[in-house]
Structure formats: structure tokens, C-alpha cells
Length: 314
Image 1: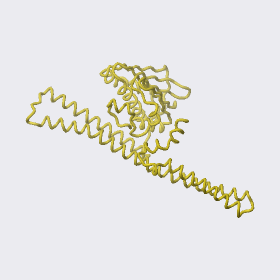
Image 2: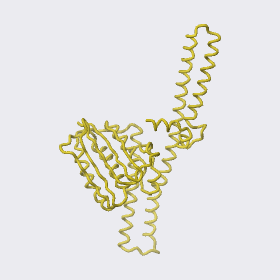
Image 3: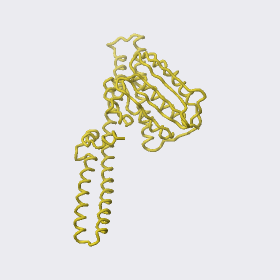
């Protein structure tokens, strides 16, 4: 909470985050308007004290004026903040799309140009390798488009949920088996522990699958070869707690407050050149919120990250 307040008070930092000048920055405008309101309140009091005999009436008038001005100030500042956020998201969206779609499209284009060219004699073995490359790049684009569609539904409130009793243990077991090949190819151990006789949770299985897939995929992707990814499922009072711990690159302390924002990717992740849209964790948090759950994490740079989420029992 203290870190969040400190971040909000860092006006220059907020302006830099939104990518706007200081005179367009919502936090700076709020400070300017606050100073203006204080001056207006002082002037109102001095004028009232001179022309109105009853001091209580003067105080009441000043309080009313100050309250109205603060309300107007808050509304205006929030409007500027929404505009700044929209501008920021637009820039980030264009940046993500240009990078995440341009790269696979270029690879596909290059592959087919080579295969169609009369100058290059491509062997059958090499053709198969090229087709695998095309398949992987198409899957990458489909994954990004799927994430964008989910985010669009979340933003528009058009997010249908079909809750029913499901076994979170069975769902995770299936995903662990599916991801074992991916993990082994990266020389990563994938371990899963589940408490006995776990109760079922009330959730939408398709949405919960998206959440767990994102967390498992991230844990493996951001763990270097030879590392370990541990998954744990236990009962905690009237809820089921899921934890996934990796021994990967971790998240820098200064960037942890942004981790669930749309399109955000930490600097150390960008340096690793690990593909991703920056939408996965935003989607996870939004889905769990809709399902009545919570998500949080603990991380240390270079030591790994543990993500947790809770879901209510049926």
C-alpha cells in the first residue's frame, strides 16, 4: 500500500509512464488544481469574514465551495487520466502488434519465398523443417489473437461464465502431462503435488484452463534450462490454493507493481527475448476476479517467482 502511494506521489515518474508532458500529466494537474482550490478557499474565507457577521456561515460557505471545487477537480483529473491511459495503451498495443505479428509473418513470408524460389534446391528433409517453422509461427499469431479477443471481451463486459463444480486437481494433472514434453525439451523438471481428498471448486472449466495454462507456460518459458517448476494444490479454509514456483529470471522489484497491467513486460524478460504479448497475466487476473478468486505473487530477481491463486470451494 505504501509503495502504491509513493508511486502515485512520484509525479515525474507517472508522467514518464503515460508518455505525456508534465502539463498533460493527470497527477500534476491534480496538484495544480489543489493549490488553486486552497487559494480560492482562503480568498473565500477572507471575503466572507469581512462581509458576513456569523463565522459559522462563513465556514459553511467555504466548505461547500471547497467540496464542489474538489469534486470538479477529481472528475477532470480522472478524465485526463483515462485519456492518458488510453493513449498509453494505444501506443503499447501498436508496439506489441507490430513486433509480435510482424516477426512471424516475416518468417512465414521468407520461408515460402525460399521454397518457391527456383534458385534454391530444398531437400525433402529441409522442407519438413520449414513447414514446422511455418506451423510454429502461425500458432504464435493465433495465440496473440486469442489473447486480444479475450481482452476485448473483458473490456466490453461481454464475458460469459458457466460455473460448475470441477476438480482443479484433475484439470492441472492433465495440463502437467501436456506440458511435460515442453518442459523436458527445455531440461526443466515439472513437479506437481496435491493434497489428498481436495474438494471441488465452483468455476468455469474453460476459463480456469486459460488461467492455469498461462501460469504453467510462463513458469516454463521464463525458467532457464536445468531449472525446476513446482506446482502445489492445497485446501485453505473454505478455499483451494494453487501455487506455481519457478527458478527462473524473476521480476525486478521496481516493476512488480505493473505486472498485471495490459501489454506490460519486464525489462529483463525483453532482454531474454522470450516471446509473449504481455496480456497473459492481465487475462488471468480478470478471469479469477470474475470467478470470485484472487491472484498474487512473490518474486526475487534472478531467484524465481511464485504465483498463487485462490478459488472458493463449491
